[in-house]
Length: 547
Ligand code: ADP
Image (cartoon, rainbow, N blue to C red):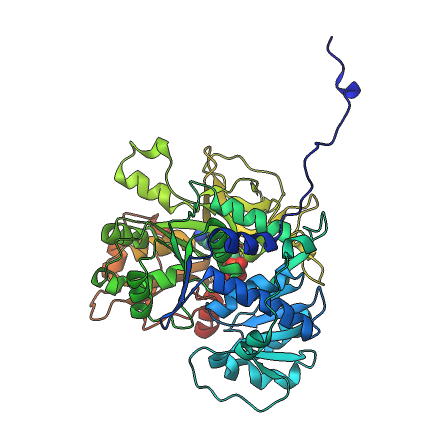
């Protein structure tokens, strides 16, 4: 006999409530993949066994420095082997890893370190001159640990300054299990802290947990998404401090892949040489970095490449196609933000697109992609808050919810960043189609409002970037007495190009509506970038005095 729903006993499952912890990632690496390599620029090479040994020693060093459980431990460092050890040791011992953007202004840097109440800062020797001048403004920092990086930058004489390698060699190679130190259900402990860029108001801290980090890692590892495996050689060009390097370091370790860490230099030849020499299979970077590699792309043997990830801002389809033509591998789009750990969606085609024309496939690849498993997305009308249809046409503010999406900010009010039902408001405008693909139209604040209609700066940029002589482009709004705002394009041309505004205009005329055509093309030698290497439209607006 059927029973009414109300009569069925509700039961808990009988599975072990083991916590999801970063300690597990560390212990897995040493048990399963001890022989796999971590290569840092400058021919420094070691194995996960070495990394794990140093990590264990570092854990005891943190104890002997009296760094309490729960304390914030900051890094001001490039992608290198020592940074990776800190990445593992800090959360595995229940402290909170605070990765600081090395390109912050002193004002933001001081605000963030004081707001986070960092107890220790680990800093690359070569980066000391960028942070040490702020020392008097950072009274809470008790220890400054210098990471040797091959540079001979002068080290100030100060009792607070310690040497990483000396500390490690004096550390105890603790043989116990970090996993066991996590009591049952400790997975919600904070593990990491990352501040947003603060383009609107002061920077806000996103406080990750062990659970959110492990689930994000598994989410990105899913086959068909980034899908890292043991046979991969993964190179996060995206800095460790840029939203956890998009999960690539923990993801690579979890999968048993080798890691290649490029250090401080973003020089294209350096990055390409490393990719060739280490036979890198997977790499991730913002579009401006991918653009910088284009001129020398064919000069290197990059035949091992199987997956290139681009995100942080829209990857122009023409850029992705350049890579597909040169390497047979497009740049796969990923959408995310610091508040989303950061990856929320990953692009690429599906089986249903196999028969599509080449042009249609390019259009699918241009989309920011499908949400990761466990991530929910919706678009809502900016004015009414009403949810909009997933028809690929309706444009609304993108909102997200999921186990690795922030639910609040560290020690500040979330303000209007969250909806009443707890979803994150992203500030991005998007469409969602019937297959679940997200397409970002623009950021709310970058959209150009002309004569009561919207112009997507992102789409205009993609059209202009498809001209073979265009290296970089940013479109911003200029106030206009008649139309309210009109688009102006700032363009960097390839060296030696004689392309004119007329020519660019002609090139894009078939691609966009007539009233979208920019009022002016301004040719620049370079465009301003943010601390994470994205094109900075706010800096461009300031420098061109376009409000
Ligand atoms: P910020 O850029 O403010 O420093 P984040 O690095 O967290 O902070 O950036 C998040 C924002 O970057 C997103 O809200 C979105 O506007 C933009 N973004 C991220 N990935 C993409 C992408 N693939 N395409 C277009 N925009 C993107």
